Structure formats: structure tokens, C-alpha cells
View 1: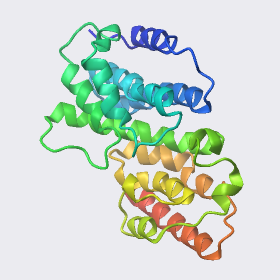
View 2: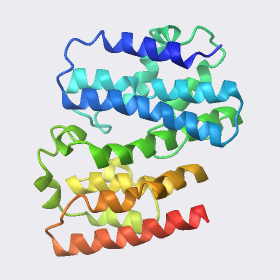
View 3: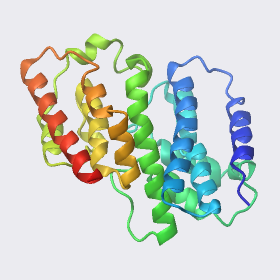
View 4: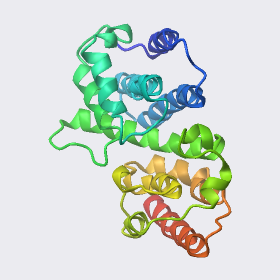
Length: 260
């Protein structure tokens, strides 16, 4: 049996084990977790899934970034190249048995494990069964959608601790050729290709090419996320400014095509 509300209580208990919560990214990731869980629930409802799968989607949302808190404790930053938070979270849950604090029934373990491990990969691994693949897609969309909100609402120094200290750092940055060309090809950006501060920002915009469900594109459209994120900064470099305008056009057209 899945009980999402019980899992939320267990999540609060898990967070209480961390004495140092001073890092800006810590609170950001707590808020992010709840939004992702709600997004996952909404997507599952829109897909008209069973009550069981709706609760499972929400549970995976609660657990998907559990490795991030250990990452902040160990490295004091959020860097998916240096630290595999998804893989680490999976090990915490299933090798240390923490998963049983969130759900007693073990019949969903493989779905939860695989969904968490796949939520931040460039592509979902092959040969997953149909239900596991579905939940992997749901959590990927739910996570990406809230990444737009995070980039819209949060301070850049909290979003990119140790990498960006102030708004001007982003405005004075340029967009690398490799990342720009990837977006022109309408593909998600490999995290290993990011070099400049603006590459990290553009990588979020490129998430759009990896969304799986119509409801996800509608949320992006309704919140005007692409325009809002691009307009958050005043780009100093002329070529970079032109590139960002081209990215705006490409991604907005892509979203409109997916919705229609």
C-alpha cells in the first residue's frame, strides 16, 4: 500500500537528521521536492492513471532528489558532473534500507529505484518494462517543469552555488558553440558539455525537447516559462543576445507544435 502523506512525514524526519541547513541550496531542494511531487501527481491524474499509480508517481516525486541533501553535505554545491545525486539517492534508499521508512510494501521497489536513477540522465535507459518506463517519464517531466519554476523564482546564487555569485555573472557570460548548436538541433544538452554560466541556463531551456506528455508542454506554455527565463537577464554580449532570441523562437515554436 502506498501512502503519500505518510511518506511526506518520513521525508520531514529524514531532513531533521541534517544539522546544517544553512546552505541556500538546502531549502531550495526541499521546496523543489514538494513541487515535483505535486507535478508528478498532476501528470498522473491528467493521464487518467489508477489511484495506485497516481500515489506511486507522487511518492517517486518525494524521493527523487533525496541524494541532493547528501551532496550538499559532502560537496557544498550542486554539481551533477561531480556527484551522481540520483545514483547516490538510490543507494541510500535501497542499500541502506531507508526506503522502508517511506513505504513498507516492497512490490514497487524496482519501479521507484529505476525512476529515481533515470530522472536526471540524458536519456532513459533501454529495456525498462512498460510501467517502469511510464513512471520514469513522469518523474523526468515533473522534475523539469519545476526546474523552470526554480529558475524563475530563486536567487541565482542558490540555484548555482559556487558557480554564479550574482545576476551580473550570468549577464556577462556567453553561450558556447556546442550548447547553442545542440539547441539548434532541438536536443537536450549533455551536462558534460556545459562550460559557461549561461550554458547551465540554456541547458534548462533545452529540457523542453525531452518532455514526454502534452500536459507538460501545456504547463510550460501557460506559465510562459521560456520567455520568462530568457528575459530574466540582460545579455551584454551582442552575439549571445541574438543567440538567446533565436533560442526563444525555436523553443516556443516547438512547444506550440507539441500542444497542437
